[in-house]
Length: 339
Ligand code: PEP
Ligand code: MN
Image 1: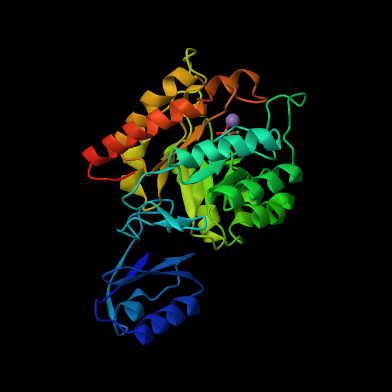
Image 2: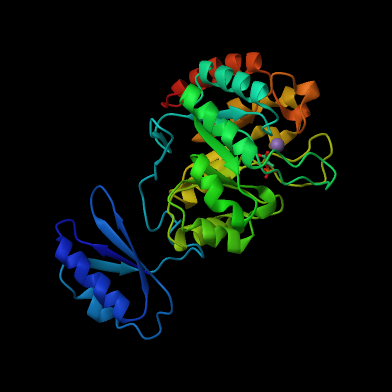
């Protein structure tokens, strides 16, 4: 249920409604919009005296939230949520398209610093690279761990880029949050609920990837876990789903972009690297994602894809990235956005 306050409701009116809602054992989530404040009330509503809330000072009306996800729903918040990342506070979810690129994994200092420079020069806002890698095979390269986090912090210092890296376990959250700007939850962990709840206690943005077999509602409910635990800074990332098709690693379901944008106020970005598995498909899918309304892109980029320790086949070179950025700018402009 949401309590929609009148446009001229005072702060005291809002505080009073919050107290009332708490008295009924509900949890409140106050969203201050540009025009008015709304209060999302979550929990068991059987004993709630709706009339008492409805007649409280400053209340316009009560509306049920129909979606299974509540705070993530557009029903609760009409305006797009903008999530500021990095030193410059780039607003993901604003009019500008934010591109984050970088290798699948941090491999060594030279590889990361060189890539970071190229990524910054191309006009990207962030650097991605995994330090803790969730690999399908236990024998594959598992990442440099804390050493990788330190290299990411160095790359940030040298380039000013926001850094994004994956967190695979609850016990790694503190150390990852200490070094990076955005904590990524990988597709394999989208339904790792203890991890999502623990990320709800973190004060940094979370990039939540769609599970490879997750439906839209399950994806948004995973986001709701993080938000409900206290962290509203969630960026959704479509990264392709598992289908019967074999010419791609995953099927990039771009129709989810406009659908998500209609169902939620959270920013939506697209990862065409995991979404296709093939570097030659990435530029076209990036262009399509931006045209479809994505707020940003997460692209794997490696200076020597052939020798990459992970996901070389789906990594574009810095040269391809630079060309792509020019095309993305043109597409953004065509849909009244910016890059
Ligand atoms: C990655 O971004 O390198 C990654 C492991 O992604 P996903 O969780 O989408 O497979
Ligand atoms: Mn990867």
